[in-house]
Image (cartoon, rainbow over all chains, first blue to last red; front, side, top):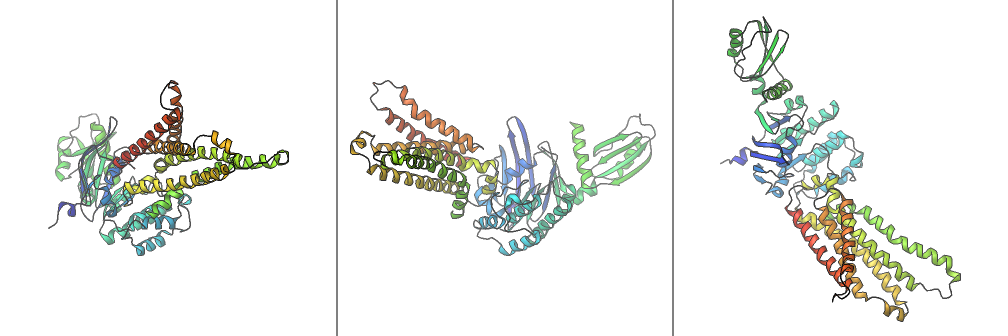
Length: 303
Length: 222
């Protein structure tokens, strides 16, 4: 019989974390299903890194419960380490170590170290074994972090903005590495990034954080299918407008009125046509980047 | 554990090299002065001078203890490698044990060097001069107490600070205060000043070491 921990290796329940009077993460509840990849997105300061640091046991939550791979965090943080791989936003490996030394040092703590995978990734990432960590480029350092996080075959992989500042080629190589390993082993991945095209490509579901709160958690495909932008041309831009149910953001530029809606149905289009004086109505598809921006802008306007 | 100890040895390499250089400076100075004045000395004697040169060595060991204690945890926190170490499947107790063992071995090596020179050189001392010096046993007890205070206080600072320099400086300030505060006591006080200083250093040193260890073990952040 499958337990909740088997089904959801990452679980956050009503997690809160404050820094002084500022609330970085506010009553966050989130679950990630086994073998899926969650894209964790939000503006700077939205609480992504704080959440991730709590998940990996580097920060204590002030309230709520966290479970990773069946271990309660932070109480069982030592037990979870063999089941967890973590790639931080900036490389933290000892800068004086050579690549080979860093691998040997890390390997000495993991009885289940996968040497075959390590060699494969070394080749794929084209890392120089004799180079010191401090002399690696940003991309190479991140690849080394990824290699060290993956070679003990973790059940859960957590990546905190690992590709920020990479050139497109290095980003591609890094993502290929992630995809190659995670798809093969059905790992559960939480992937935070500002590059939403990467998230759209890697993630099965997406969670949007805003000002410490979870704004949205949805499968990527369903989100893109159900979130649409309706563009209408108003007869008179100064006339009052009635917005359809499910609206998350609207914008008026001259007579062009655009409304982003969630849970899209043709009734929302009909609503706009029947309750407003509009001459033309179009429905547009959105990519994840647009959806994210409109959700956050809509939230800001509401506030 | 061996991997951790190797890593900690590398972490402490700079203070160790600095300690060796500082240790050798008084001997070089003494050697140079002796060589310069050799012919003018009526009865050249190496023993007393060498024994005196080991004195700065003991003080330097206390400084090295403060630097090692300060660097122990704060250094890795400052360069964020503490995050890397915290993600490895090792317990906090193992991390602490490795650092304390490596630090103790380094300090012991320096102490053996200085004590050997002191003992060998003082064998050559004139017995009458020897008798007027403080008791060797008491001197070593004071040295151990103050070294423990230097390391323990820096260790406590290192357990929550991100700056090894601040932890080490605060430790040395506490060491000086502990050494000097008995001078404030009246002359009629029944216990001798150096004994009060020694006990102050011992109690504070052990207290700081225990407090820093307990705090680090309970702390969630690396």
